[in-house]
Length: 324
Ligand SMILES: [Zn+2]
Image (tube, rainbow, N blue to C red; front, side, top):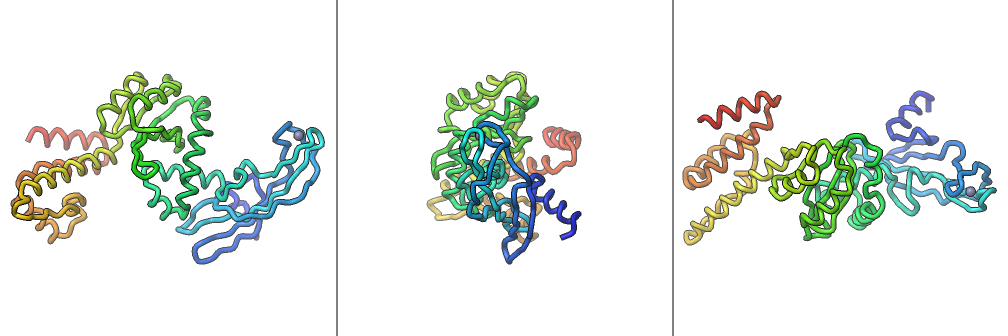
């Protein structure tokens, strides 16, 4: 491989500190052979007086995803013994934790994906099993906690509700700009959340992004009085969809004696995505169940607001619609 190309692969994979060798690919995976460049220092005492102590069995580890393919590293790691403190270690721990089948960047990505998706979605998309994801999350709570935030000047938090361990709802706290999970809390109680949030340096928090729960807003404002509390557009739209569907269910219950089933999905899909025929169907349904009209058009209006190219345009649209 030419030198320039070689560097390109290295940069693409974020492996500047490693020696990247052969790259080969199959139907759904790419394999990259890598080694540690030069010598590391002893992680126990910092000495650079080391002697070779054998090699690790090379292992495949998932590193990243590219074009729908999983990129694996075949990592050849040496073992070293320190002349100073006499302890042994395996090199490359910056890239992968001992015994993990995922590199640290791959772990970080999987955790990030878990933020607003459930386990089965992430498993499907990244091809990482449920057990692995769970272990990642649980370790993250213990280890990562919030060490990194001490070094940041500005913090942008996101607070979400997440269904973890199947049914139970818990709050998750993330740093939105750094794309890092800061904490996964024990439950979804506001007390637990507040207790956690007070450990974050409040003066640095610029923005807190939450869903539409009033209790969350109050908690965020109480702990971070200087921060701007905003609602994620995703949550606003999800909320309007939820209201739409609630109205539909109530309407259905009212008519239960007549055994009606009011279709669900058609009301939740964005109107611009519907075919003419489907739009007709919605209009007919709205005529038959006029109680749903308000919810439907409100939901569409909100979606339209978020499609505006700028805040100014959105404001104009909002003012026009509230005056009519
Ligand atoms: Zn040492």
